[in-house]
Image 1 (cartoon, rainbow, N blue to C red):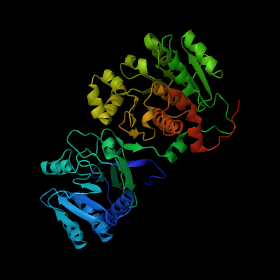
Image 2: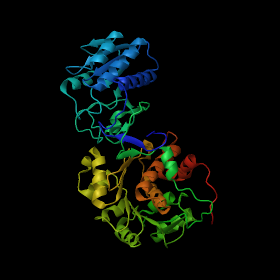
Image 3: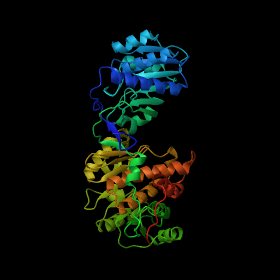
Image 4: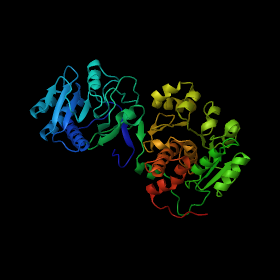
Length: 466
């Protein structure tokens, strides 16, 4: 499936295949793409000093063939073999083009190409590979397919591994490119996607703009506020009235037809002053419960669940979720909150977020939105979507309150919990990028930018009813 038109497919380590290609054709295409990406990264080929760290597999073969292409364009390319054998055809082509096989790291390098192990490799580095990696510290590193040593299929990094400035991969993104902590080890990721790979369905995907455009609920010409969905918010308290304001700001961003607010008298006064379009309690199609509810969280959650409608459970209310509920749930913890919910150590959740998000989704029979640098949305059936929008400035107080309200609005508008959570997370990140413009951002700015983020996807919406 093409990335521009559908979900960005993510394969497990040996799942992609190409039918009816002659021997060597796939490697030739990969090497051409790798060489072109390296030239672009270096700003040219002539005179550049390049070192290939070459392992024994096809990953090393890709690098050797790419190195031959660079050498023919005037680059000074060396290869350090870190295994007892190398890809024979690749090594022959590399030498024929003027590439040099060396026993030590040359001086004055412009870039190191990590081709030690590819998608079939096990986590960790062997001793010879680790010595080579240690010897090139301080030199920019470009990884071929994945940084050597990361776990390709889980995104975990339990053993020593390469940290790349750029990763050049082929056909599709892999789990390690999207899921932390391996995603951070990849640096920027460049996809060479013209290899005509026959890709299987993937359990881990990342929404692309075209996917979000199809999923965002756009009002029909004859829509009116009730048919567009009513979202209810139970958030805030006398101690934390600001959480109510921010959660309502996310919910009342225009994606549902109406927002109702139920909360403390002090918080309600502030909400209605800031959002005069918000009304009081009544019938809703979805609830958002938890942000800033403090000691009232348990009662607020019970009241919402009594309505039997889909419910977003965030912040304080998460502590009161004890198991599967009769209502469809979207749980929105960060790593610390998920740790408290499941009993796993926080450091374990952060080391293996994909595994822990999936386990929690099964445990609670709910969609789990695990917030982080790359937010994960896990369904009970094992499907996961990874959010790649957003900026580091989004790590700011109250941003999660806005997100919870936004996801609730999408639920009320008719999206199922998995779609509502993943679309909400994507739009939230896109809004943060717009609001930030490369600098600091606060949660209120993110909420204010939500309509612009959606407008950029779908264009001008038609006029709805009253």
